Amino acid sequence: MISRSKALDLINEDTLHERAIARAGSSDFGTDDYREGLGVLLDSASRNSRLEKIAPRMSSLVVDVLAGRLASQAGWNARPETLALPVTAPLVITGLPRSGTTLLHFLMSLDPQFQWTPRWVGEAPLVRPARDQWEQHPQYKAVHERLEALFEANPGLRAAHEMGAGLADECITVMVQSFISNMFISMLPLPEYRQWFFETDETPSYVRYKDNLRLMGADTPNKTWLLKNPSHTIGMEPLLTTFPDARVVVLHRHPVETIASGASLTYRGADFWEKHEVGPIRLDVYSRAVKRMAAARERHPSRCLDVYYRDMVRDPLGTVRRIYAHYGLDLNAATETAMQHWLDQNPQGKHGKHSYSSGEFGISDSDVRAAFAEYISEYSLDASVGS
Image (cartoon, rainbow, N blue to C red):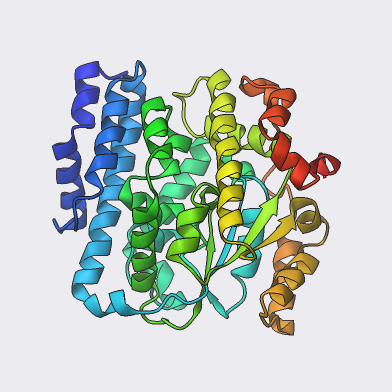
């Protein structure tokens, strides 16, 4: 393990910026509004008793985010006209983590009427090239090799959450550029940052994200965006105000299952977590999320379509048809055939079974039920446990 002084050097703000500049080959980070969140993040880490374990991961993560920020700014500087492009009526998938959002996102990404962000583009945004050019791009190759190494070093991670350089990725990969992000809460045990995050308006993250969508989709500005992120449950209000014509699909699964599953995924992601702390953190974050989502939906009625995980698993194509019908989208035979083929090739458990329970992670099922009582009742989720 490294020394504390070495750990502090690793998360020095100036050093992190210098490393990002060296990687990206540019030095324009744009406005300074991200520095508050970055400062809170680094200060929270510096106070942590596990700094020596956390610092290498945080250092790498922050440099990645800063380099992504530089890439976006370079793209806007090169093509400033992109900032005036439309982002019209995106279709947004959300719901508590582990509620089927990834399955639905992957399925709908097969429909050519949508554009979406592949992981390799989201990490360092650029104008997305044509699909047949992806594998030859150095950035694609780097992301692919890193993800494969991650899966090899973390057996069972792919079974818990599939990722790929060319697969449809979550919004959070890009939104993290503002350093107001649930990603840092999910990846790092930093209570001071978590408290600051919940007291801070996420609107700057959503505004910058919209500009990044304009950049990434600059060559197809009139094509509908397909977006997905469980953290939109926390940021539902800024999502609906930043994208006033967004069409939102909210998936629902019993929190007894989603919280334990998410805790397992977090714990698998790094060796600095104490197993007993992961559950209470997930419980805190996402019990707040459903309350925020409910309040935002009251202020913006009729903006969301509710979909149940149990229906998604039992009849994926039927669920897709219902979504398309609700939002007036066309689902042609070729796309439906492609979706069925994908389902046949990717059965649940393809990469192994993801096993978990609340008790492993410092909470009980009754704790989860109490924290989510109103949410469980509103969506009649008790009938869906085990579905």
